[in-house]
Image 1: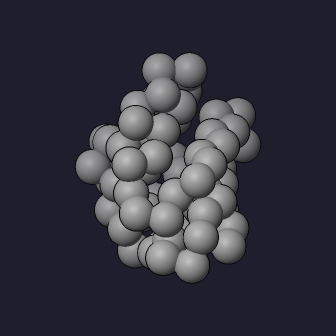
Image 2: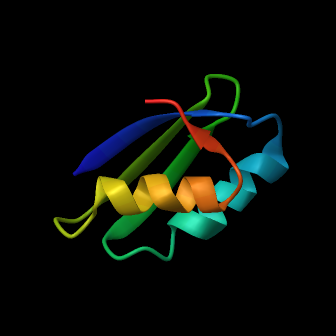
Length: 67
């Protein structure tokens, strides 16, 4: 399963690291790709991966989920 989420407020590699640190520990997450210039976070994982948890983790990291 793969989720792609638009995120605003990212501007650098530190932003990408902060999001990865919040999302990677979630159940079912296998890989997190953060594209800062495009404002997109793509998360790959198993069947237990939940979009609501991914979105909440991104918000917890201090960023806004756009779509």
